[in-house]
Structure formats: C-alpha cells, structure tokens
Image (cartoon, rainbow, N blue to C red; front, side, top):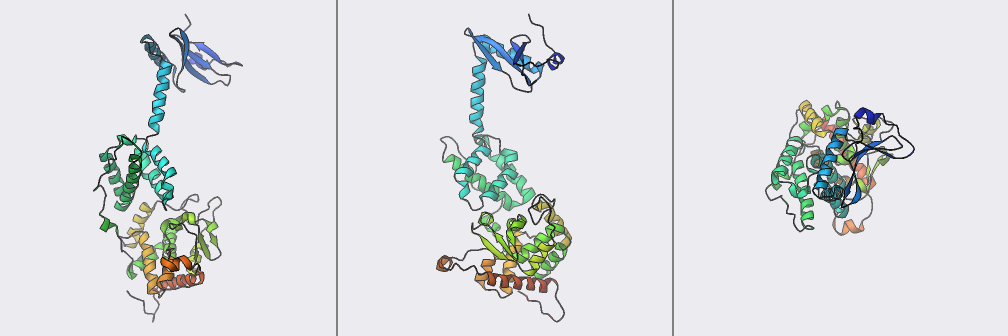
Length: 391
C-alpha cells in the first residue's frame, strides 16, 4: 500500500524531465509536470479497461480525495465517472449558449447591427443588464426579476432609461422566441416605467435658466465645458462627450458616420465660441478625447455630475438632451432658416431635395452657428441698451 501524501510532501516534490504520477491512495494520483505544475487524477478500471479521470485544477489534497472517493463510488455503481464528466461538461457548454448574454451577442451578430444606435444599446446591456441577468439561462428569467431590474435602473438612471432597456431586452427575447420551439418571453404589455406620451419631451431652457446654467457651467470643469459645447453646437451628448481630437480639423468638426445616429458623415463648422472651448481643453498624452474627467476615458458619470450641477445652478427638471432642443429653438430665434437649423442638428432633409441636393452648406451652417453663439451671449450677458430677444 502506498504511503499517504501530505500537502507539504506535494509542495516538496521535485519535477523531472518527464511527466510523473505519484500515488496517494484510493486511486488518487498527484500529477507533476516538468514545469513544476501540480494537479490530480484518478486511475480506475471500468469493465476491465484502465481509465483515467482528470480532476479540476487548483483544488486541495482534501478536495481531490473527496472527488476520488466519489469517482470510485460511481465505478461501484457501474457508472464511468469519466463519461459522466464529459456529459456534464457538454450539458454545461450547451446551457452556456442559452444565457441572456450569449443570446444577446448572437442577436447583435445576426440582426442587432442593423440598428442605427447598435453600439450605444449594446453598451447599455453591458452596463445595466449583464451584471444582474447576463449569466442566467434565458428561459429561467422571471418577469418579477425583470421588473426589479427596471426599478433599479429607474431609481439610478431615470424612467426613460429603464424603458429603453426594457425595449431592448424585449427585442432580444422576441428574437430568441422566433427561433426557439419552447421559449416564451416573460415580457408583457404594461411593464414600461412611463407612458408613451410622457416620453415626449418639449423642455427647453428659458432665458433665466439659460443664464444660470451657463454661469455655473463656467465653474464645473469638464462637465461644464461639455454643457456649453452642447449648447453652441446643438450636438447630441454622446457625439460631443466621446469626440476625439482627431475629428477636429481647423474650425470643422468631422463627425464620422460610425458615430452619427443617421449613419452619415457630418462636417460641423464650429463657431469662434465653440473653438474657444476646445482651445481651453488640455491635450493629455495617451488620451484621445477632448472631454475627459480622468485623462483616460471620455467624460462620464452624468447622473452624479448632473445632480450636483442642478443643485449649484438651481435649475431642475431638465436633461442634457434638452440642450439640443434649446439650441434648435435659439437658432430659430436668431433668424436661421429651418433647413439650415436642421442641418446644424445633423438631421437629413427629406423628400426630393434631400435626394438631389448634395451641397454641404458649410458656409450657411457656419453663419448659423455664429448667430446661435451671438444670441446665447446676448441672453447670458445682456449689455446695456441691448434688447434681449424673447419668445
């Protein structure tokens, strides 16, 4: 009978030029590789044929002995533990293919990339859904669990964000249901956090609010600079916040189709005021982004920063996207034509004109942005004998 090993004896084993198996007892062996790596295996006979069962890496001697005893018990019951392990691993691998995250990845690969904002939506899943439900089998996810997740998202990010996540998960689950014989989605009507009419926003900053927001933005570091830049360019939050220096060429911001919601390249002339904001931004080695809190990543943490900003400026009930609507309204107040205002926002002109008129209108957009900046400065810093335009 071989001598029982100890943890100390295993640690003191000296590797040789070839793989070694040192017996313990009950069919258990310590496997010692030439590299010095140690592991365990179980040797047994099944139906008269020698067999080997490799045990998981990183287990202790006590755990290995327990697994060896379990394996020998299976042999006594006329079950081959090596075959049982293969079946278990195959089932686990098959099950892993049906997790919410695995199915979501398959959805993006096959159909999801057709969406205009595929990258943004995939990011929402990674940030808000996968940490809670990503590794769950999709057919085990209950409606109550989805509701609890949506409640958490609403508390931390607002009801609109919760509804966007719900719509995204619904789309993925419906896609999977259309390809499965058994799966039935747990999502039903009425699970949204706000009614469709409530989603429609018409909020813009009035002149007093604009003055307060602009004043505090001048003291709010990167977040404040981003707010001013959004007002001066009418850009979407994600477009400006993730803008790299490489997209700036002189006085033109070239937004590529890959980052534009309408999937078209958009040259956006920058007013002198917008250029001044960029001139104040530090260029940090290793950081490609214009707006950054940490010198590595694009500015983020909007929920925390926005709450602190609202408290400082005394203006509430507005979102960063409302700045885009405010800028569009100010363009009209400044006398900019509707077509040029829409081009400044990056919207496409529909109909026959949109198809046949391929002129870029850069000069007209440049003039429109200068008028927008001039009006904003008239509002936030009215001069004597200057009448501030009103709604």
